[in-house]
Image (cartoon, rainbow, N blue to C red; front, side, top):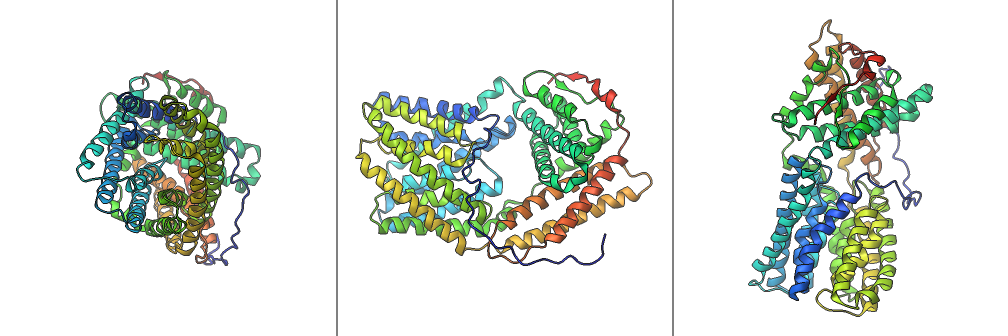
Length: 566
């Protein structure tokens, strides 16, 4: 390796590309679970209010019901905590909005409060990685509530309705644990195995062009890290420990495949992944002398505490500033045009902001296309919905299911259902002129997307380059630590495994940080050569660590799998 200090070239010219923005992806493996959970959480409260003749209160129950959209990828113990925090966060944002609405009807003040709430919700959701759907649902509810006339005496009752519906949503979210108590962790492990198998297969077909497989390798390491985060969220003792240990060994095999793809049988990884899909026994990788040592590094990871929340919020300051400024300007632009629902423009702007400006541009295009198509769908549905309140509720439930079922294909496709659903919800308190609703929603969409994106261009994220430097330094330190252990004649197996796992995590973070910074505009040049050198040397060290680990069974022995009950 050259000792010369890598240099950074000039920042690349950014263009507003439309290529692939609207392309449909394969649906999520569990696309039906959020969709069914949403309907199961929303339907009973809405039907009860319909029976009582108080459908006008549905906005408050929907605030709690929509919490069922969250945490479907988390183990149930972690899901219980996450859903509880989501419900409390939803109630907190709703409380601020309702109290503000009861104290003032000044639209300028309401928009300002809505923008600040959106910025706080965005920062907290990104820092805690709560999502999908992230902050958008929270912002939609709090922004809409700001423009509903309130009195202080009504606030406790409305919050009580939201809390009751949130409790029901929590129960809906936890209900699958009765059928498949280990579903999320099995699913995450299977995804890691499939991603590692895809990389190993690609490497085997063209090993001389390994650089071309870097994206597949990055996807593989991201899937492995996601699996580890899922497993580390499980209890370390008790009846579930046996299942967790069996899954940990499978994730280790995925890590080994990424580090040494030439020595990997992709079909074996895929077979293990298929075995995890159902509710049957968990396949074991075989009795290897190194199996015990491979998991020694897990205890160190479990003992490590996450960074304090305030430290995680620091790098998100530019994104929060973009959200506050963009939402405020979008709301004020809507007010200037004389539209009576500026929160639609505010929510449109809030939904745009992603990890970098390039992704924000893509989301803006998706939002505009999806919302405008949704307005047309509303025009086709509204005559049916106006035949009676029962049909109105049923149409909303169908659109709710469609939104969650389609949004994993592409954001714009889910928005096609979200838009008419939001328009129909406004009619729970009484039918309105469809033409006026459609016009206002279309204008607010265009205003929110345009103003919101311009705010993102103005508020630059100059910290992105610094984060890349820090990620490169962290990866170099992790590689040097692992290399020092490898240089020892007989390194401690637990220390070596912990170092290897730490290096894999550092490289995954480096790739994610570099990709995020590369999508920013107007920033300083990124140390691209340093990133490439850190990744190459880091992955070479990973491969060497795999070769130095305790002997593993040969491929024939691995095929003799055993089973362990979950």
